Length: 178
Image (cartoon, rainbow, N blue to C red; front, side, top):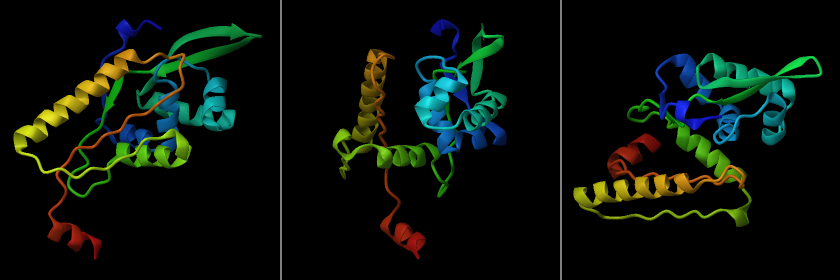
């Protein structure tokens, strides 16, 4: 699939699109399609779903505009469709204060499912000036972009998730926990 034709970013703007990306199963299907097109059968095998379930989820993603058919071929009288992501990246709307962050929920679920000896997790608390905070955000994004350019679809998947944020004030966090 020529990647020149693929838009850089797909902006999720509708409820249908948000529901489509909110499913962990569909998130995993999109991960399969991130680097190369795949058929329903290939998707089902890689995600560990039945073909019928895989087909259902792909149809929802297609209806929402997140994936599309990029080629077809005839196999024993049946048309086989190859699906791919509609864009290189998906931008979600800001969930708003206190709203669940869909990407982080999916990242945590994927992390919890990963073999313990095959993951690197670290949380560090920092005290930074606003300028340092902004610089670190830029450096983290540049590092992610650098390694995304090095990605080879023939290699096993690896996920990088980072969150740089100012935590809620202690009084607010304690109040939310009650």
